[in-house]
Image: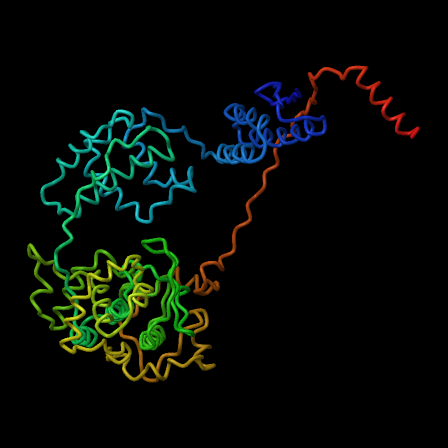
Length: 500
């Protein structure tokens, strides 16, 4: 077997076995690899902790050697952490999950949480009971007690959400973390939520009244009108960036969403025209939709504002604002229910609808068919064109909504994205709808930091560090010398072939 010797500073002179090397050439090549890895460990001051990794690098090949290199990279960057053990508590492991560190360790099996603050909020209800319990000793009784001690005012859906988080944490501790052998929570432990309550939606005439209510800031009405006509989730629309829209062609691309299922579709022509005019009046910055103050518009937390704006528009249908044992009051999320119901009533297919909403099951859309039949039988019609329903945009969509912008409009929209048009003659945005630009934003614009695709950001060059010089003592072999008879036999065979 071949061995290699390296002089490693404070670690002294060390000898490494090279079980995978068959020739002197392979042994010298592995010695070069070990010297390079040891140099990086010395430069990072991690040579003592990195000795086990060097031993593994000497004995492994292929993908196993690649894994050693990745672990050594983490150690040199100061990212190496002790592996969780059976004595790791539920709270400690939950922090690994919520912080994203578990996703870093197992990128193929664990995805980073999109909203870790929601996980933290749910875990806070049970950490007093489950937090200090080691994972190896956590039982079904612990979990049942944690759920039983939840505050009484929590609804069934909230209890179900907390139980799902507990189950997920323990499932990850089983695999890929492999801290415990089995999840102590049996199948079916997560309680069922009461989803039988009727949900509310708007009628087309109520939508027209909402869009026409000039007392409501224009930024909110364009946001509501977009949700109602395109079926996107409120939080998805709130995260839209200008690069996600192509208003020149009338399309939207939604890569990041709740179901991790990227989707794209053609926007309704009236929505395209409305957005062109609105962006000409109020050019977007980081987000497509924002409040008059410049902050992002509410997603999941926008229900109260939505109901207040409905009342402001003179919409007073009681079932929209009352919560009973059989019905929920209207929420911002119910703009999706409005979209699905009205589009089904007007003959759109389930496929056309699911392309926009992201529903994966036909059963989810089927739940809206009864309400859609009622709308169709009443002859309530479809939504009014958005660029005509909003008074500030009425009659302006055709002027700005051409396939290409005029030269003057392109000059006026420089630095604001290719889809922005010039403001219509005589049309100026109101102070309530134009957020004030900060000094930092003005400086960014002056430096050329305008809007653009997210992938256009140049990467910074990383500074390279030179590792310390390693003294390569050499390689040696403990393999016995070949027998003389074997060499003599080879000579005889060679001379025999020459004679022939």
